[in-house]
Amino acid sequence: MLKFINETVEYLQGKGFENPEIGIILGTGLGQLINEIDILVEASYNHIPYFPTATVEFHKGKLIYGKLAEKKVVVMQGRFHLYEGYTLQDVTYPVRIMEKLGIKTLLVSNAAGAINLNFKKGELMLIEDHINLQGSSPLAFNGVEKLGERFTDMSAPYNKNINSTFKTIAKTHNIKLHKGVYASVVGPQLETRAEYRMLKIIGADAVGMSTVPEVIVANHLKLKVAAVSVLTDECDPDNLKPVVISEIIAMAAKAEPNMITLFKELIETL
Ligand code: HPA
Image (tube, rainbow, N blue to C red; front, side, top):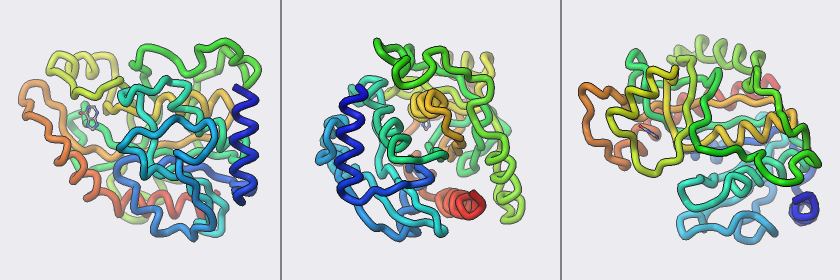
């Protein structure tokens, strides 16, 4: 994998992706952050050597390099999911590339269902810990030890200082920011009532289909990590309404301005 990583990095450096400090994965609910970035270079995923082959949906996927709050950032517009048929190594390959380009911090956003019923749709949740329910690990491959410690420590996968700054920013702007545990499932089907009950029992506050693989690899590479979920639906097993994906996307869009405020102001402090 190291040879592929080096070739991908050389290609991007040749295009001008020079020494970014921060990597950002724009999930559902943070796409508009792109409007705040002074874009210097972009590369379509399907032109970047060894990037996962873009599915039809991800033909618009791009890696963007530019400036946000005077910081050099590299931004993934569109991420890869296990449910699209990629492997966990594919899903996390861009994290390895951003690290080799120079980032020290990875910021992630996603859309998630609220398992904790004190949390309401449209609100945000700072991820303080996670549960990996995707059935495997992005570190489970031959040669992983050449890229970092195989038995990666996960005692504190999310950075305490960044999280405390996020909380301060949220307070200042009167943004409701819950804290909790994010469980990642494969999807793409939504959960059954029995599955929502199980998720609550095992300690999840929110559930989604992304983020955990990228966070595991970021910890493998010793990056500082923070992640925020926009809660798009309330997963009450005793009163479960059918989930409509367009409603999930609409709810994510509603919360987007708050998410953008949090990320922009955080980056100013980094
Ligand atoms: N389950 C899984 N993923 C999700 C959900 C959910 O309820 N809502 C948004 N992403």
